[in-house]
Image (cartoon, rainbow, N blue to C red):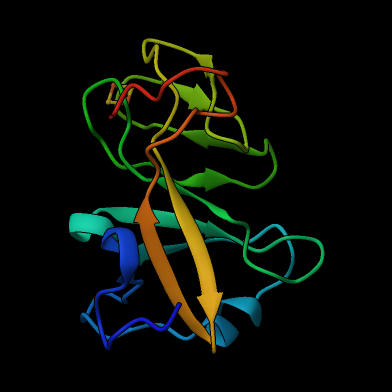
Length: 137
Ligand code: FES
């Protein structure tokens, strides 16, 4: 797998910062385990990348777009939840709903690090949290 400069196989794109510059993985991995770092992802969607206990990036990114009515939301480190400020939906660390009104889990994307570049690509197979086809495909 040798991706060209900006677009890789399977619609993969480089994770970018607010200014549109690619973010090196090492920059995000300088944060402590458990960090949820926001990047601009597929189609520009803000996407949380997760620093694992092994100081790697988790292979699943979580799209910062509430499945109720589309608000963005922060990660609450104390509660270990994503908490939507608009109508109070809450999601666990994996993006599954723990409190409505949202009734669908947060969208996932694939995250891969190659030579310090962060590649994001669409998640089209089974959603492992639900054990079924993802609602967004
Ligand atoms: Fe998030 Fe309504 S948009 S709870």
